[in-house]
Image (cartoon, rainbow, N blue to C red):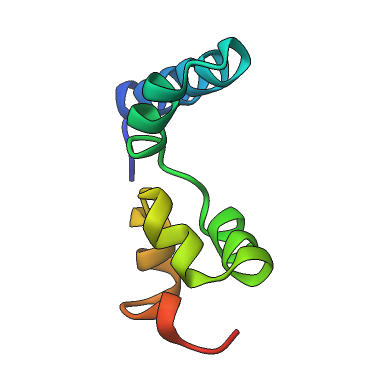
Length: 78
């Protein structure tokens, strides 16, 4: 289970990511996109809508999806 500090750090990173997107700061958005721990369901939706290669090429942090769906989830059929 995550500590309050870990949860707060995730929230802070996600907020910075959103701010960078609003500023249209492409470099910062790309950097933060790799740090944000997206929820497993969000990544599964991205995979279903855009394909596994999209998730890989964008460098999304898949830690939560890996835990929920298991190794190789991006390569399995939905």
